[in-house]
Amino acid sequence: MATGDIALERGLPANVEAERLILGAILTDESAFLQAAATIDVEDFSLEKHRRIFARMRDLNERGRKIERLALIEELKKNGQLESVDGIGYIVSLDEGMPPLFNLEGYVRIVKDKATLRQMIASAQSLIDRCILGMEDADEILATAEESLLKLGDDRDRSALSNPRQIIEEFQGGLNAFLDPSRRLKGVSTGFVKFDEMTSGLHEGELIILAARPSMGKTALALNMAQHIATHPSLRKTVAVFSLEMSKEALLTRMICAAARVDQQKFRAGFLNKDERRRLQMAAADLVEAPLFIDDTAGINLMDIHAKLRRLKAEHGLGLVVIDYLQLMSGRGRFENRVQEVSHLSRGLKMLAKELSVPMLVLSQLSRAPETRPGDHVPQLSDLRESGSIEQDADLVGFIYREEYYKPDREDLRGLADLIVAKQRNGPIGKVKLVFLKEFTKFENMAADLGQESVEDPAI
Image (cartoon, rainbow, N blue to C red; front, top):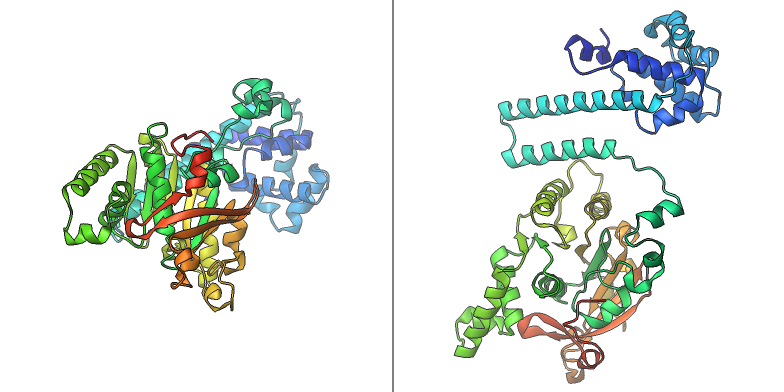
């Protein structure tokens, strides 16, 4: 018995008659093929012979040939499959005496539904087998199970193309709101005034890369943004931080000291005065109430991040995801080199940001090129480490540059930092001046910027 026919032998969900009607409708009117192919694939047919017939129809369509009896029979012969589909007689029987099928969409949905049920059964059986064998960790089995079910949902969700009328009608508020800049959806504020002006905040579905050489403060800046979004009274959006380098205790210590403006060295040594202890308690109390979630799993992969974020979004919503940092992530599967692996990761993170409709702030290391460039150590896009695809996949690329790092004797450079927007898909590029308070590992706006617009206003 053919592999595809085992479904019927085992009594799995299938509707052979609906499959026959779809194939017959295509032979009667080849325009029905595009209608059917928009929803179902070759593997959605339960019978192997139906899979082969539909596959050959697809080949004819791709070559621009008319899908009709003789052409289909010749195509099957050429592939040595005519006898395996029960010969010419079966092909003729598909559309012989068949009236026009006005409810093709209904039959297509039946076939798709049955295929989905079979795939769910197969996934469940595979899950049972892996659980019984016990050769993998429970968390890994759970993550892959969630991923497989998610893919089934993605396969069913093939959104139709939208024309301008539909886009405007679906936009909240209709045409007037669509044309009113003040009512258009804006990104979430980072708390850094000039950066927010340049970018309109962090936007849903975007991959934001924040890169720098070691010790420039990329983790500090990302945590400052995350803390602002999670604790600002007018925002308080859920933030997920994945730290592959630091422990969750170390991250929380950084955030509390930054919010309280307490020197981390004094905190670790325990030499704190009464006012500093009070500020630390207030900062800790504020963070305890914030919708902030930290994961410090070392070497976490995309599948694990995907599963954790979907659960978090279902339970608490999701306003921002921070990953520190890209080069410490691991890709599942085999890759010829590290460049391919990082390319796979950056593309996967972009797709994840789009799927979850959340800004994805991913930190990245730079190569040693800025160190070796004579005279000019300002980062460039070509300095992104291990993969040019990071630049390609990112919607926004920002660099942190502190000239004092290279010129420690210059007192006039002390505490000055540049946040360089080197790429922005939907906006300008440029430079934002910031202040870096090293003892607090905290970035702040320049005083002149705060004079124009309050940082406490989350509206962009």
